[in-house]
Image 1 (tube, rainbow, N blue to C red):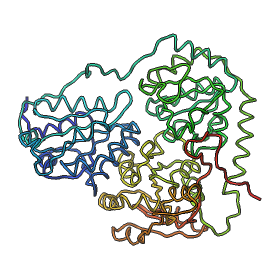
Image 2: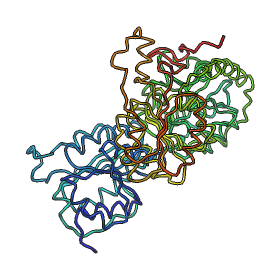
Image 3: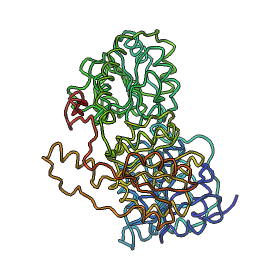
Image 4: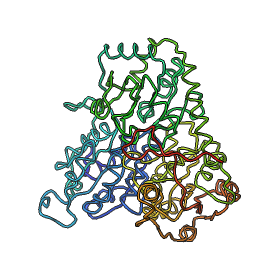
Length: 563
């Protein structure tokens, strides 16, 4: 039985949990743990800011399906993590955060770089710990990973004081199942609920599946397709549900909600049965809840009991793991025939496609939609796309077709600008043999732009497409449409991104004309290393459709049809 320090136990615990890479930034309260690091075969990635470490660990978790790990010191180190922790919490991303803390004898004295990290992060973590006894550390690490990955995944934080890192104890890492009083991560629902659901499904004439990220988290991709094909039910997806259903499947419709496809929103409003699979009825999906899907009975399958009837009242709520529940329901389903329903949706879809901006004569004007469409074509839809937040994010889901799960990495619930660049770092470490593209706006990119230093230091083969329109584009769009074009604080000055990239030794291009897009994308793909492409696009282009906040989802602002 070896006798180890708390610092050594942290790394031993991470090894026991299968951790291969940690994203972090050292400091005084975590220095003992960093001192022990060279003795362990774990890759540490030095980010340029603790927020970058949080987003990188999050991107790693989303791309790999494993638990990501981020590390920081006390005080400003831990508080700089909080935006990333909240982002992971909103999007159910399993990340374990380990922070240093002042010594236990100094806690509560306003010591140098002391912050109540567990108090601050309590609302934005699935659980958190303040370790006051080194003997508890192995158990806490084991529990933290279990909590992070089980049930509805989420972030867990472990705050470790300096003296606990230096204290010694006999080391035994826990084995076997974790038992926590009151924590039941895989609940099961009553058989009656399943029977009621089957009766509604078999009796539906205009059914529609609303597939959320739970499809991916549960690994229920095959079951969802089997369900849809047997019942001939079309599938709409949430932003984070993209990739859970192949984008080229005949029953796949596209994204729903505020910037979803118009024909999807029409289908929701005309459906007689909604099947919500692993999604939480976010306000960006529902619009005005009083007018949401007025003709539909509703079945909600969800692992988190807190989400049932929280926003939308449903007829049948089933608590459980989606893959397990669907496997119980599918054998009882009758073969469905909904040709008339699918034909109606196809008519709406045709009308929507006629409004597509790429069907307009754009001449020499370069728009973000064109860039994303060409990126999809040159990659064949096989790349991992990481986005920041804003207009470019919506174009990245409207004009890129995703074939596989975990190939779209994007901040949904928090809408965190600055997420994209560090998340692409994490995604590349998670899947080093796959092509990774970041699609970012000029505003969000500048929030975490120093992470180019991380990309350069690690020589990561990440390709970066900046959709540069000189504005905080989505806010400007709202100002144009709802605030009489009073562009208050949205014009943004950007540096020469190519010079910034070149200063880090990263190859860079500028693109201003549509004819330059494909050759530049192909040149970037051939280069064995990171690339930054600065796409100068139309400044006042908008994302359509758009549901005004609080309005019914069928009352969208639409792009006019071409003359």
